[in-house]
Length: 478
Ligand code: ADP
Ligand code: ZN
Ligand code: MG
Image 1 (tube, rainbow, N blue to C red):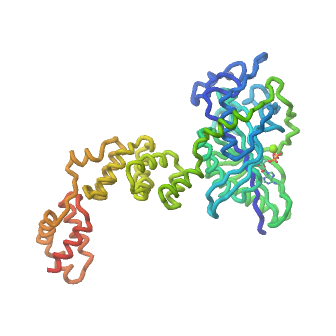
Image 2 (cartoon, rainbow, N blue to C red):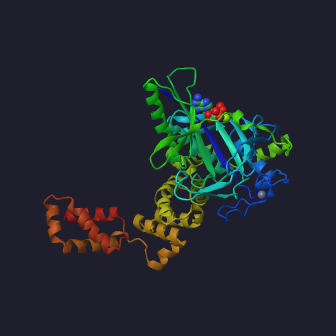
């Protein structure tokens, strides 16, 4: 049978602060285990939390970027549960009075512009990290715990159940990541766990006005695995329903190795957590000017950049979407566009050969000097060098930061052009290859490619093949 797929996502982002949410400990990644800790983040008796103002600012910026309504008053609560990565046996989170309510994210999807609604955005603290001996939690004889991460500020974003496929969930997440990157609130690295996503999923007959029972899927650590896990889960639930059985509300774990979901436990209810207001923190009161100042300083967001690339530079949709998806690349585009006016050509080079070279050589777009890039394209436009030479110079420019102009001078790469230089070379090749010339004249027109190659070789690859082709044809008619 056909079902309508209903998905809602819960996303966690580590905010880019220097210190933790309630203490001065560093948030630096990759330190010796248990060295970024203090009595507050370890929950030792007598210690008291203090708000990190920067974390609140970043959370508000994120909420504004997501069109979510920032609440003038919000509150922190204790979410109580025991797990070894949680030193206090409760997590400070926000329950019934979140930092922001509602909102939406709009993005470019296969079907055009998509808008997915949000339910809430709130702040909470990160837990520590368990390191299981052996390959997995199931085989481990023991586990080690590192509390360096405990207390790092986390932003939780909860979507409405308005996503309808694994593919769409992935597109939503990729665009959420981009928006948060542009807003400068998180580095959003799924592989390092600074962006994580749990997915709730249910099926219902098309047109039904009631939701089906949902299952929650956890432990997906790439955009690709989110899509795969959701597709798998759709299939699993559809099979159950087709067989007249029911979906049980539960929490599942995505098994990356075997590409399937495994049931972990019954889904807990919020009452299981015995939420109550955090007595050691005042309710959070934000005044209008605090919020307005942050709104004024809001960096440009992806939708705006996309619009600008289309309107200001006249790029086509595909190029604009691709550049927007890579902030470093679009920054380079704009810096270079300030000194090089053929925007479409520039965009083509950046998306094509430059992107390829960057990946090949493991470099970032910020390492490219816009002046050098503009120089290279101008040399090509002016006919000083040809395309193959330009590509070669681009590679050296990326690798060693060398000026294309200087390379052309040092190595004598200037293009060989004009009949005066080219005709003698063509004549020489014709004289040296009588058999090829004969078969050309008998009708094997493809042979011209062979002759053209010979002439190109004589120029050291520095001529325009089109020009040689014209001269060759001309001479072969004689
Ligand atoms: P819970 O109380 O079980 O945590 P919430 O109502 O808080 O559930 O919703 C958590 C997430 O699950 C949200 O992203 C929401 O959009 C999504 N969600 C809620 N109900 C469903 C459903 N029937 N199918 C799919 N997703 C759902
Ligand atoms: Zn601390
Ligand atoms: Mg909930």
